[in-house]
Image (cartoon, rainbow, N blue to C red; front, side, top):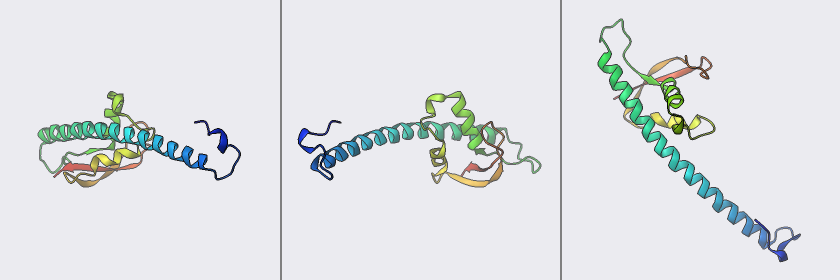
Length: 128
């Protein structure tokens, strides 16, 4: 944005405040758009994870030798590879919000097996 002619070269001038306010408003608008896209993506991802968990639960034998079903960040990564329109962030840190709802309970952890998972330990989640 161009600084008004009378405000050039004057440190701390009113033009700086106008420019800062305009930039701040633009940033708020951009961040609002990110939040809306992320909210949409989170809704879709949560629905997919609920469906995947229920599918695994139906297939589970219930025997003690078979671990109970779960979903985890690896499943989210696989979903993002299949549905890139859901990958709305430059980083994947925001995806932790998938599990923030009270419908999920933490059921342990395991070592990530997907590319990009770096063999890190990830939380396992199950529906309550």
